[in-house]
Length: 65
Image (tube, rainbow, N blue to C red):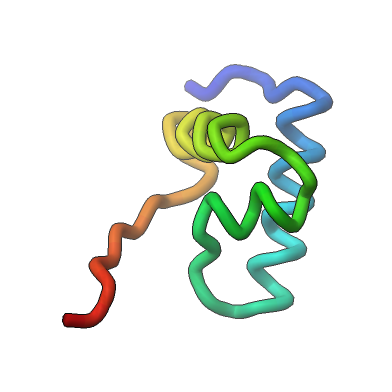
């Protein structure tokens, strides 16, 4: 059973979902960090936490070529 999210985690998830709905494509953590004005490590760790909670799903893609 997932733990209750903190206010900060809920805010991050909401902003992430807004960006995802706007672009309609998977969002890379670097782009997310840039758009939210936060550090790349912070964005990455928050995404991992939300994935562990079962709220989002990571998708790994290799660049073409």
